[in-house]
Length: 187
Ligand code: HEC
Ligand code: HEC
Image (cartoon, rainbow, N blue to C red; front, side, top):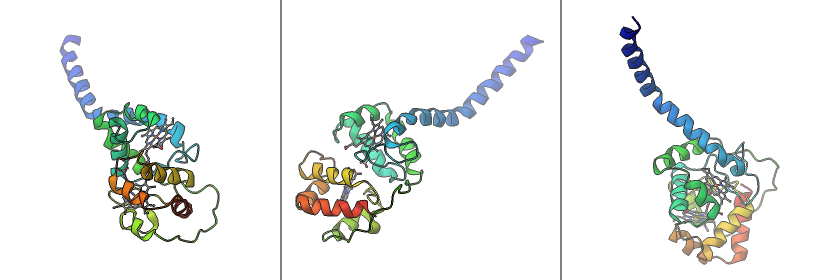
């Protein structure tokens, strides 16, 4: 009796395992991504202003950054080690996971900043309102500290994973970059 039923039971288990595999994989990846919250924030608000918001960021951009951190095209020791924990196949689902979350609401109100000169060109790629669009990331609401430092690293040739951005930033003075970062962070 028992011997007769065993193959069926195993057959059923095998089918159930096969059916639940994709969901299981997604859950496993979500578990793996919990570590990201220690810096990028439990609710999408990073733990300090030097860390960028990734909730609600554009999917393509997140995939590319994770790829660039892994390969060293964008040099950052901390992010290189975390990106390397993800396999190449996990990059897109990981990016989708964060991209689908809502951009975090502002925790404290900011005064409106008048638009500085020179931002029209940015919006060709970053879109009106700096909300991002393929392939350019959302910048609106990113912290002043993060934006001004990202702009400086392009200008100084430390971040070279996009040569258009290097050229564009080299044409601006530090004072212009500060004014633009101040404006974009207020959006
Ligand atoms: C120990 C803190 C820390 C952890 C943990 C961490 N990050 Fe980061 N992350 C950073 C910092 C700092 C930067 C900014 C790096 C720079 O200035 O170039 C960053 C940048 C990024 C960026 C680029 C965003 C942008 O706007 O350019 C992405 C995407 C990202 N992290 C995703 C992740 C993911 C996914 C995980 C988990 C697998 C993760 N991070 C874990 C600190 C962290
Ligand atoms: C030709 C299109 C284009 C123009 C014009 C442009 N950008 Fe970008 N920008 C991009 C792309 C694409 C990226 C992502 C680069 C990468 O792969 O890391 C980027 C990245 C950035 C980042 C880094 C964001 C992050 O989260 O790490 C900042 C800051 C930025 N741009 C600011 C600006 C400003 C300010 C201007 C105008 C003065 C501007 N950009 C003009 C395409 C553009």
